[in-house]
Image (tube, rainbow, N blue to C red; front, side, top):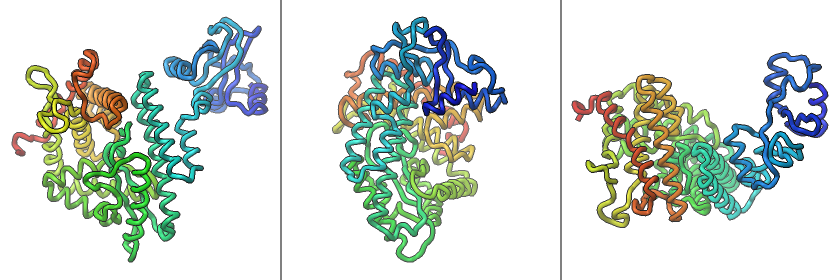
Length: 450
């Protein structure tokens, strides 16, 4: 073990292949040293075979980067040994890691983030975001996990936002003396924005010193403009940090949330579904934590608000008609198209949100993650929550696929353009919606509440 460690240090590598008569019999990584040697106090004079992983996962040298990456994912491994005939029973000729592949393709989140950190021209940022969308298309085609894809694109989006805020601060030097936090809202706040849609963001700052609000508005305008240049359109409802109504101090946000919770009219409930999914992206994250605590306190003082929010979550009926046909738009620009956001994804997001607020959990924004947490809390309905999380992932995948295909947000889908299998998958994803709606109806006594 000591000899292997010295060799890895000398070669500056994080893994080493163990061979016997030229044939690969095992692999040892930094993780093995941490978990099997350091953590278990294993003597370093033991043979390397005592900590190696065996048998090795192997592949031939003729495969493409994408094929190698897919095999790694399916084999649940970060390394593959390259052998002469592709099996572990032939001589090893090399080894490749998932990190090697991603860097070679220059399309990993870490690679894009490093490039974003160095790029000075916002036009370069836009090109990098275009590249990220190309990767999403490739990953969807290879049927990679939607969770992996959404994590990837969230990292890229966050890096882009951080770069834009840093750039804006340079343009507004007075902002360097102000403690603030940039918040993503809506689908970006929930880490569910696979494709670029319109912006939903806000700004939270500390203190009420004279001139602070004006400085923060100037920063926000720069950031919103930069994001627009990178393909994120303006929000039609002006839910952006440059809007004075959504660029507030911590006390200002407490008051704003309090107004919505104490007077839950339709507009206040709509705002709640967007703003309560806030996620800190840049700046002092402790400000966002304080706002989360304030939200819990406000709900504790106005518990009836959750009944209003639950009733609002049931506004959209199940997406299928009595005869199991898709409910499509009856008129307008999207006539005869299916609104997968309004009919499918939004009901799941809205119901996950209100159930989490009932348990006073505000530090989880992602819809599928919320259902995972709910499954741990409410074991009686574990299967329903698991089904709901999977359904949301399926709809995210379908929306992204058709958005890329039609070069739009993917929200409205022509049902006739879908394959029979896709229709069946989509219909199966709707099943948890009705069950969850019935649960909310009972849990919040909405028959009496109305």
